[in-house]
Image 1 (cartoon, rainbow, N blue to C red):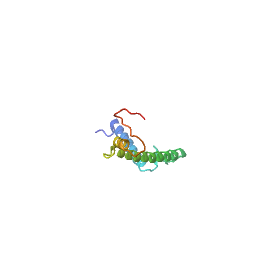
Image 2 (tube, helix red, strand yellow; image 1 turned 120 degrees about the horizontal axis):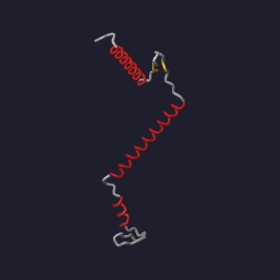
Image 3 (cartoon, helix red, strand yellow; image 1 turned 45 degrees about the vertical axis):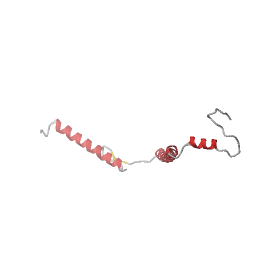
Image 4 (cartoon, helix red, strand yellow; image 1 turned 135 degrees about the horizontal axis):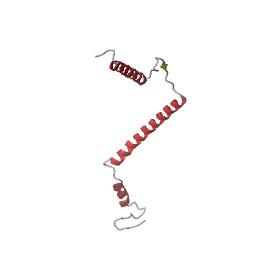
Length: 111
C-alpha cells in the first residue's frame, strides 16, 4: 500500500469521520453533550417547547393506556362464552310477571 497516496488520505479521513459520527451517536443516546467538529461541546437544552411536548406525550401515553385497558374489558365482555345478549333478551321477553303480555317476534307482534 502506498502510504503517501491519495487512497490512504481518503481512507484516513473516512475512518476519522465515521469514528466521530459513532462517538456522537453514542453520546446522544446516553444523554451527554455532543462534540462539534472543532472539539467543542454542544449542551442539550430542554426548551419550553420541548418540555411542553414531553408533557403532552406523557398525557397521550397515559390516555392510550387507559383506552387499551377499556378495550380489553370490552373484548372480554363481547367474547365471553357465557355472554349472550340474544338469550337474555329472549329470557326477559318470555317471562310473565303479570306486568304485561310478552311479545312474540315469531308471530310478528308489535309493541
